[in-house]
Image (cartoon, rainbow, N blue to C red; front, side, top):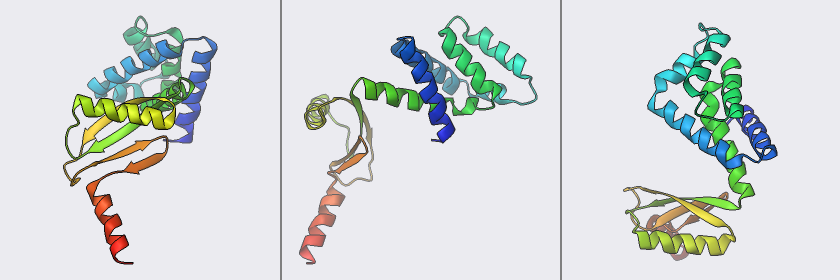
Amino acid sequence: MTEMSKAYGMALYGLAKENKQEKSYAEALKLVLTLFSENPEYVELLATPSISKEERAQIIEDALGKCVPEHILSFLKLLCERGRIRQLAECAEEFNRLLDEDMRVSVAKVVSSVELTPEEKKRLKARLEKMSGRRVTLECRVDKTLLGGMVVEMDGRVINGSLRHRLDEMKDVMSR
């Protein structure tokens, strides 16, 4: 993530907080990102320098004017005007990070060798919440290259409970 994207995301979050609209702005950003991911040609159109800034701003207004709050619309126009519309996802990532921080929510990225059952996810979430003292949201994915176990990344820390890691630890102990 670029420093510029962080600055834009932070500025938008400050505006949202000032207007007490953090959740509605987050929902609007999610909507716009979904639309952009489903229609990547739209982002390319908005990033085309051969189309005037005014025309690009009007395209945004026409497409999203009734769907998103006014400040989000202005933010999108600003990114477009400054040639940074492709960095919207990074700006939104910083916005959401700040929102999670204020709401005391941590995102735990879980990589496991097999799909976790709902019960396993529930127990893992409860354990991580107890460890961190925060609410936890799990983002789970499967990596078939893991021999077994799982790796959890949360709040800048990595908990490596993979079988490969445990075997490496045993190897280190045995070689001493």
